[in-house]
Image 1: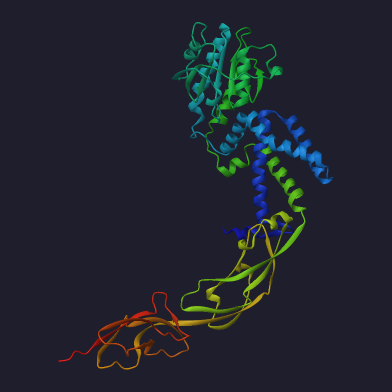
Image 2 (image 1 turned 90 degrees about the vertical axis):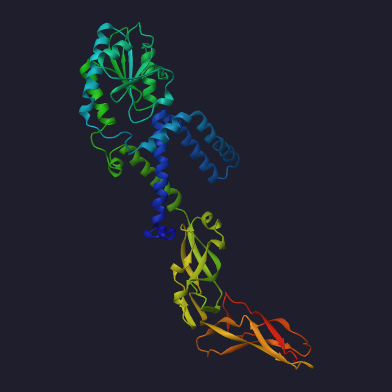
Length: 483
């Protein structure tokens, strides 16, 4: 698709390029929403929005110092944001990249039913023995960058294996066990601790770690309390204590179904099923921003003086004159900033060669002949009609004949030759093709021996030399020898 097609008018004040503009802003808004959800920084966002509103008001009422201070603040705020929230920003971009995709191949859910049963049986046994445990089952996101240490195991999930890992005599019982699909990949893993004191309350380190990893990624963390012998699950930063292992089985089934769907979603289908609220909110925010900033912006116009150029002109067709040689193109855009950033070199009026006939042609300048940035519109071209005088030529090879003046003294010239002896010329179609063309005059009065003279072909003014030919030739004179 050519960039000019983006300027198609879809309605009053709405162009195809505006939809692209809204779509890009919606993606950024979507990232921001995911970021706010993961960092729980809504209060900070409200504060930042208020500062932004004050800045807009300061600019509107020309409060110079206030606007200057806030502008300086926003300049360094982006750097502070990246430094402080680098992990959260990274996760937001990861969520965007994996949105609508599946990181694993579809597999029938029954393949994991034995894994779920083994986890439930192991947790039931650990609860009876009051052995503390922490099991982490990843979702679609990668959790490696959030974990530290641990021992690689890569064993099939079984109840005895899980119970042995969290046996108080086991060296890795204080860490977490990672279960990916149907395998225990690592144990004794250290997880990030949550700072959410409201959720942790009087619980221990295991619960804090379970909440912490669920804040960082879409995992299901299962915790068995060593003191109470009860089981809890953490997901999306929320900790819930379960009544019994039947509730645990329900959570496990739901988590595995979300992570390993039996049927792969199409990209288009996932757009309308995954994080629908966030996506709709992002589109609404982008549309509102476009309406406030763009739609209500003043439509401005600017004139550009542009020379006429041509394309597709063969060497047999020559443009002899164009009246006028330049035209005035009037462009319009929303806001003066758009037009001020456009130079005359970015605009071209190009006439296609097939539109030009031999002789004089009056040709209207169509908008399709005008190349311009896709975020502006062509309002007018003045003049809208140009007069083009063109001549068609045909290609011919014409013999070259030497032109000489004077007579040599006491000698006789036996042979005169021209090299090359032919020249390729373009001759107007309405003119007769000559048998030969002559060189410039050569004075042979002083010739006394065999001589070669460099000269040029005298081409009639209505002819044109083909681009493969040259008017430079050599004329050789051979003296007749005395017997």
